Image (tube, rainbow, N blue to C red; front, side):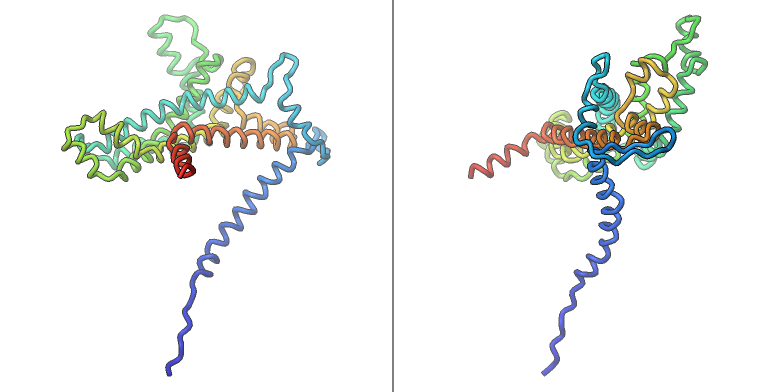
Length: 318
């Protein structure tokens, strides 16, 4: 009788190969996350004389202080949330719409645009430039002696420059435009990939049936592209709530209403860590940002994917 050969299981080697990722993720991500939540209940800061105070357990005092109005009745965490979301929406809405139009143009069967690889490279290039470099460029362009002001004075006849970076709404608009310019290429590539992943026979069938371009878009392209759009919106939201470098450079030294109107959540978080060294309040604000991000992501998912709840209800009713 021949010897029975024992089958070799390679499953353990797969677990061994992916183990480094989970170890690094746990050490570099999960531990800091839990420690941030933990220290949000403590007084833990460094004084100007570099004396460390704490960590002293103070319960919910950091949260109460964060949501308490100041002498003018303003709750600054809500003001910073409003600023962040407003500037994100000003950049994200035109970004997604413009990217969707470009994606439809580049993937259109009827148009058959040549040199798509070249155009993909060109529209993606702004994403490769550092945000701080973009911010410095626009600070120069819109300064009082910059080319934009020179053109403004030339065509309007104004004797004094318009202080773009001293006006709240113009500064917000510039910040939103920079974010739009940096990310519309990346969004376009993602939407193009989603459209090219749709079965082309569906478009051919709709063309044979006499469907118009509008009908094809709303009945085929948009519904099948919904998962990619949801991904794009949620990732853009997460990135928008972490907006920091562009507004930090644009409003540096502005003070007054401009700083108050363009201050973001992560800018305030950076102030807690880098300026006041208040790690307890920084942890509290980090938890707040996490909760806001989670709530808004769920809302975006529900709004952009209304059919998910109906499917669950049908399954439960069977």
